[in-house]
Structures are given as C-alpha cells and as structure tokens.
Image 1 (cartoon, rainbow, N blue to C red):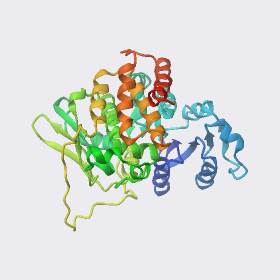
Image 2: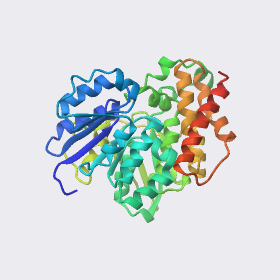
Image 3: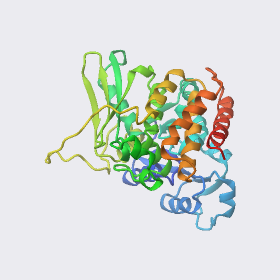
Image 4: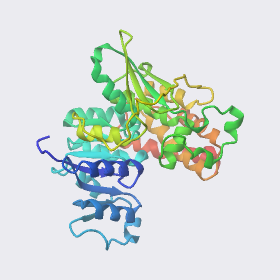
Length: 387
C-alpha cells in the first residue's frame, strides 16, 4: 500500500473481534487509522467507539435499532449511515485500504463480498464467508485483485507456517482445537449439558454463538471448510488435533516430514495485528510466552464419535457446492434453538446432518442461490425441532 498509515473499516466493531481490533489500532496510531465502524443493534456501543476513534463513518446495519437509538453523542465529523447499502458504500470507498470482517455468522458474507469486489485487503475473521461461498469468494478475489488475510488464530497460524516452505511440498495442515469445555465428557454427560455450561469456555472469551460452536466442535468443522477454500487444499489434507492449552495455534507438515507450528498465548490481538501490518511484524499488545517457566502442551486426536461435527466438516469440505451454506445456516438456527432452551446440546449436530442430507445438492450455485438455501435450511431446522 502506498500510504504509511493504513485506513481501516471494521465490520462488527462492537463484537469481541472488533473490540480487540480497536485495541490493536490504539497501540499503533502511527500505522493504523479507523475510517469506518459498523454495528448491527449495538448502537450505543457504536457511538462510544466513534467518540474514541473519530471515524469518518458509523454504520448501523439494523434499521429498526438505528431508528430507536440516540445518536446525539456521535462526533460531528462522523457521518451516520444506516442499512446494508451504507455498509457497501463504505467498504468500496477508494480511501479504504483494509476491511476487517468481524461480523458473526452468515450476516458477514455481503460485507466481505463487497470488499473483495472492490479489490480491498480483506482481514477475515468471519469464517462463514468461506464456508458459505468459498469458491465464489476466492474466484472474485482473484478477478478483482483483492487480498484475503486470515484473522482466525488457526488460519493465521497456517498462513504464517506455510511461509516456511513451498506450497508444492505441503503434505497437510493440522488445525488445533481446544476441545471446548466438554472434551472429557461422556455421551451421557453431554446429554445433560446446560446452556450455562456450554457458554463457559475454558480458554477463549467469545460471543455466545461461537462459544457453543466450540463446545460442539462445529467451530472446528467450519474451520476445516474455510481452510479448504482459503488455502486451496483437498479435504484430506486437513487434520484436527485437540490441544487444550491453546498455545499451538496450528501446524503445517511438509513432504519431508518437517512440521512447522505457530505458538503464542491465546490472545486474538496477535493474529489481528499480523493481518493489519502484514508483511511486517511489530510490537504487539498481546501477552508473550514466558520461556523462564516450565510448561507442557498436550496434543491428542479428537473423538469423532462424541463430536460428530468434525465428520460433517470434512464431508462438506469434500462436496462443496450448496453444502456449506446449508450446514452453516442449519447450525446457526440450531444453536439459537439450544440457547433458547428448545433443544438439547446433543441435538445440534444431528439436526444439522438431517437438514444437510435432506437438501437437493447443487455443485455450482450462484450467490443468490446460496441465500435461498440459507433461508431454506433455517426453516427446515424449525420443522426438525417441531415448533
């Protein structure tokens, strides 16, 4: 980029990734500047962030919430835009260098799509973008000259480790998983899991949907699909291992048997900053490993009998087409039902499989067709639940 300061738009700035991104920006004022912030319903948090960073734009994507909100505290230099059309206007603006896609779920797809179409650098935390529309997004990025840099800690680790060798010499990537709070639970114990237990992650502080996904290991299933498209891999080149300490964020194995890993304490600020300053590395406000203290790290294969989401992830990574959009939508709806107390924890993944197997697979859908399947899958989950 020609400018010494990179101008950012942060989509989903009030969520956990968005807030961590703002911490990184605050620590690097000579390198990073916020031009735009977006939120869906958290309008008062958006106003507070605008007061702290004085962006050119604040975007509230949910119109009813925007109409109810008090915007009197918005800085004079910040223009309020409402709705998805405002978001599109901002991410495509020529002054924007980097778009941070931190909106959770399928709602993040269109912002990422517009950023790619505009040839921006897309710092991607929203894995659902590639789960739903991986082939379309990657093809559009190639056509428009956009760069996609991963923010997910696992995919950032793979991205970094891949630089140790030639892609032609890659054998596999190994995604690490914390295993969530239930990695040692029996099937009988899993049947009794409560919402409160599922939201108590032992390592990471995340929003409720992602925290439940980590507990079911659906989060890792989605990451398998994301890695397949982001790095141009075959599904069989992606392996998952459980690593409870969450220090080894992922590994890559080359043909000669060499394995390269990226390690750091579990703090999202490091992968966020790496994407925002790439290819440079600069001091980061995240914690560092203390090599003066003894430590040990465990790695073990996951039990796919107790956590069948991983099997689904590999199946969808192999099939592509409409499968990713259907799985993602079904999972979002099933997690919502679990959080509302309408289904058990152990119903989430079987519901997703039932919907996935019931849909009419299309190997080459358009973006509009993917949204049609997204809506269909959500309706099917409601039918499956019986409400």
